[in-house]
Length: 460
Image (cartoon, rainbow, N blue to C red; front, side, top):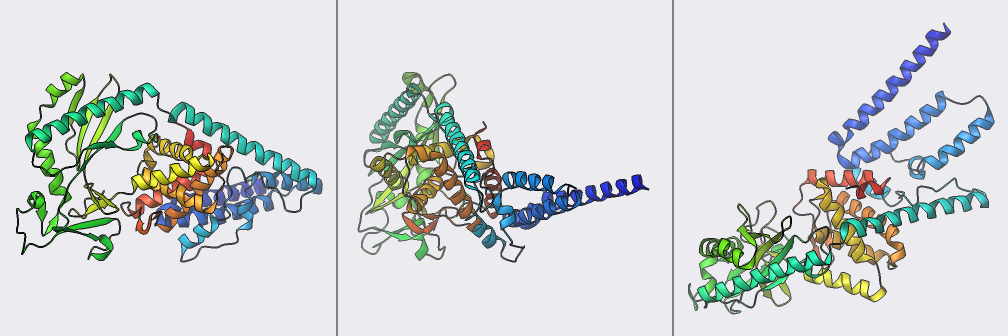
């Protein structure tokens, strides 16, 4: 009988465990990242309580020791969060992020512990922080930093091609109203990571002020802040063909797509890239198909550089580039670029206090570049999360890198939960606009799971 009783109890235990595992494994599919997170917290707490109830030790002293041990192993937020599932799952999870423990906080012990116990907990917390700090610096030096020689070769290749394109356009179309082309991008701001593989060739257009007017996206029927329309005006006084760029008009607006197609036909169909490449000791080929005009340049046996040819409009303080929406929407709208101003703001803050903001950004960029599921996060999104974090905490000293890294992760998850990341320079602009709800859920879920062991993000 005793054996039967024991077998029955064991079977019941497995049944509860299997049921809980089934619920957790399917929670994200049904409830999304917000629901899965809250359900996981609640279910894990119930499971722990059930396990304790059926395996209570006979000796009170053993129970005390076991409870004390579990208090070290379990995050304090599991038992401290009484929230149940509700209709507004994302709001609940966003609130829980305010008290969500990080690696440095996971060693928090019981409230009211003795001074010696508090000292031990403080020591353990400091060791955890220093351990992550060391791993971050090691990752930065081993995986993030690009060798100086590689950077120099990539810049020289880009400069040579820029000179060839400038000479060709001025010779072929001397009347095309352009300002001097210039190279731009993270490679020139010391913010590129892992390898020197992309730059932007900016092509500033000259527009007649009395013939063109810009309209912000929020004032159009599309209601899309961050994108602009460029409208042709004064047609009654200055008819079509009065401006060189009238050939790129669609429906009364200057079309960035037609602009790119025009340059694509000119550069792809008229330039002998193999001949130019042989002169420059490079292998150059246009990337096809491509939504933008991009050149692939092989400047070493195993090194490739991608150069994006970007027509640019500067209207007062607004920079607009011919870079289409990620999902192919708003073909006639120009994208507002905040990159130059964002980068200048970030670097100025680091220069002012010798902080680790740029270092943190480069680590996050390398993580996203090395992990395929995180590839959808852009440098602009990461930069803005750091800029928002700087408004909450001002101390970004180098020795605080681990704490700030975890802070930025929590802030990023919080913005993903909201589905809205405001641009630090224009809060109307949602930098998550081009991500789908499913992509936002997947990103949030992966980052949320990594908070318990952020070192896993550094595995390459």
